[in-house]
Length: 604
Image (tube, rainbow, N blue to C red; front, side):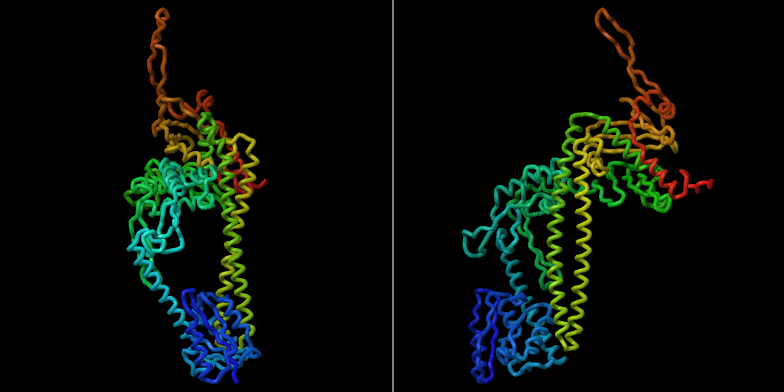
């Protein structure tokens, strides 16, 4: 008598296996077969490959039975990779077992025979139909959730619960089973987030605010990415959306209204502030612009960082108008020649700040180190989590690749060999892609760890003396409103530095190498584009010592920029500049066989 092993599966615990088991038993009785056992998978989707019963079924050989009987192919698998299903049937056949699918009981896939091309096509079509049926069921389920979501705005229809809410049983009935309810502590954090952003803080500053106070978001410390998701989430202004994409050419989105946590006015204000902060946050990875959005051309456009590249392998950065119009265009910048040295500009502004010693600035510098170390440690922790996930993905893909390679060795069917080889190529590409990501994250992690060491090394020094160009940029964006450079001659000009608090500085400069200097004009002194300085000063008009009265008079005189730069006053008010970058540049030119004017050096 022919010995039979049956296989039955249902996807959920609400379904019953009895119908499938009865169908297998009746088939065996009608054909006078001996049913040894029925292997079961209860409450497990056909998409899951490592089902306990399915694995047991694949371990059976001709020593255990003569034939495997399955109620229908969809019970065996609903995987979208239909070649996997066909491959597993071939492997069962190779182990000396015939296979019958009761949705076509007259067809027997005989033991120890290769599936022919017709059989492979039929099984592939059936497996594809089973996968499609699963997608159809899932689509109907998703459509039902969309309808429930539209009818009940607070309904919980997906597993992910937005921050600020929790899922609670619906007190008004069984449909929906769960509804959203606010979590007071989380709602308070959201309100504080919006309040801080609307007070002018960047997301980076807000992240430090929460982290310094050990305020976490469901166990996670704040990052710019986390806070950005919250600040842009419409649910906090009372709008919930759900999009259904499955089985649709165009996504279908439903929008419902709930009680807002943040007013519409405060929500939109936060979006605008974040947008402006993003515009003024440098994004260049090579030519970092610490004055992005601050330094302006006389035409009103922002100035960007450009590399003049005077010779191969040598860099010379400048600030230049961002105008990209052609000269014939009516909006072409007529001041496009107003470029100025990147290094000189940064050094002058940094020196200006170092010459100021208000309590407000000192506190800023004092907090800079601790804040930055915390931020870097948080970023490193985030990278470690990403690396862990990538390593896990790589391990899974490597295991899958090994399994696929073993199948290739065991398979003798030419058609299946081609399919398996194609899958192997795809797996190899995925593993290569993950390896590249791992390398990129490791480099980023190493740099951030080095930055922490650098910052800690400077911890005992004067903070103001050790700010990186990125940290200087943060300082400028905190206090400066606008910076303009106005050239008067090729080697002379001046900066106008406007602070957010209204203070304005005029800084006269000469770029002549031997006498390079940047000098602060006195208060109430101004300078025009022609280089004429208007000097206002008070002088004694008369005095009455008997009545202790003094009368002053305001006088004005003018001088040229060149006259001022030659004066003793200019030298007295000169900023202390570190011009070592010039020597480094000249040394690079010398190594390249060039002099300061980019001419070949004369041979001795």
